[in-house]
Length: 233
Image (cartoon, rainbow, N blue to C red):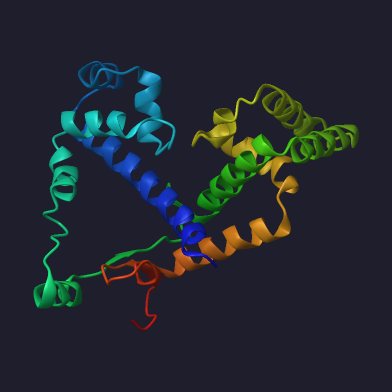
């Protein structure tokens, strides 16, 4: 499994956690969404997307929210190099050995970040990326939805018809959101049937590794920056 594909699910989870943290901070400061959006100079929809960990808003939009909430200094530390100084020679070697690891773990519980929902979001984001570039895969998903509608299950047929509308219009945010309705759509999804088995298996493997715990380390070299918890350095 490549380092790039491994970190895609990890990065998604970190963004979900960031969105939740910003939402908790806003509520702790007793700021409503209207007031918060005004202070940050954005629409309520953009604020909701940020608090949902949506990757669509720009980094600048996330930073404006962090600034209003008084936590932009954490990003400033990273930008200034304070968190990762770059000494040279022997000092650099000592620094690399001494820098601690940060362990990120995902638990399959009833919380907002339960494993099943993360897995569903990751699968659908991968599927959306593929069908945007490969119309044949999108058509295959539409054909699947049409066959399912013809199967005669009226309750699910409502969701499948909505899926046809989404796929026709490209309204992908509707199914990638963290709302209850988006979860229902993903549970009845014809889109992931278009994913090649290799892509699906890779994402599932990433999620399993993330559940076990992945250490984000500072050892030199790209291959050592992300590894499962407990794996020898």
